[in-house]
Length: 423
Ligand code: NAD
Image (tube, rainbow, N blue to C red):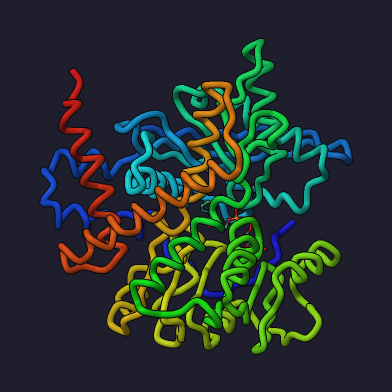
């Protein structure tokens, strides 16, 4: 069955976008040709086609991917996406972004990403479990606590991670909690992991506001996507005194000039399955939502949402990229000229992978930290990374995205040169 089509604008090829962004940083760093060519290619790519028994007795074949972009800085890390639009080029781009994301915040990881072309909303709980266990088995040749550690992304949950952990553990004959992160706490997950990405988004929004001399109190915020990242960012920004005026999910958006209580909206979503129809709000389309008057725009759904077609109508002073790749390069240029301050994805949404790293470290040492310790460590890394990227962008006289990429690509290139080329 076809997925519900929501956004009508054609999306740019995410891999092309990732390569364009990489090229800008590579030019600024004057990378040697060999280093540049090596970092432009994923290290390895796996495509799997696998059967799943459906509730009606039929068998459906699904396609999935797992891609390692780089192993230069350590084992690979990156989420698994379940979505009808998953494609090889999307997974490639997201794997490369993960390499830069880990590097920009100083984690000892390379980048990876995985995905299955499916609509999890159309699968029963049992179908989802069978699909997950089979996919985990198919990519079992790549994943492992020392080699590649998946995590949740769009359409996957802590429960999905639990099934992957269990499947991998069954194949090994003992429990291997460190094979995935974003697991439920009961089986080795970390305190604070669920909130981590949204919390990180909030920390950099606060730092960016401070840099711009803007107060968060009363600042109007629009959040696209009300899933893990968007709903937490909305709640924490609301707690910091922001006014959440617009929110959307895959079914549409809501707008209320006087502000929306994100916790109440979450209850509405839990009861009805969507933010649509929230009392006291006006309906808006996802396209209109992005153009609402606000100070802070937090795209937290999918990539390619802000394009050359709508960038000139964005009214936000600051965009904090909760999602990966929500702004296309052409839109980036328009927004730069319009002096919209963008906190780029690899920095803004790195909170998730930072606490995933904490989870992996805790699993490996079988010793767990309190939520307070996790949040303190997250805060320290996010603030340090924001300041580091701001300094890089000021040094090179470039925007924050280029500053972040220069820092990240520079670190991976340095490590590559230090390790040398085998043999
Ligand atoms: P999620 O599945 O929990 O939520 C996604 C939200 O986006 C849902 O509310 C969904 O309804 C909405 N959505 C889906 N398609 C949409 C569309 N076409 N238009 C508008 N809204 C749409 O996913 P998530 O974990 O919150 O991830 C969101 C984004 O953040 C993704 O780009 C993901 O790669 C990125 N990200 C997530 C994490 C994490 O820890 N979860 C970490 C870093 C980056």
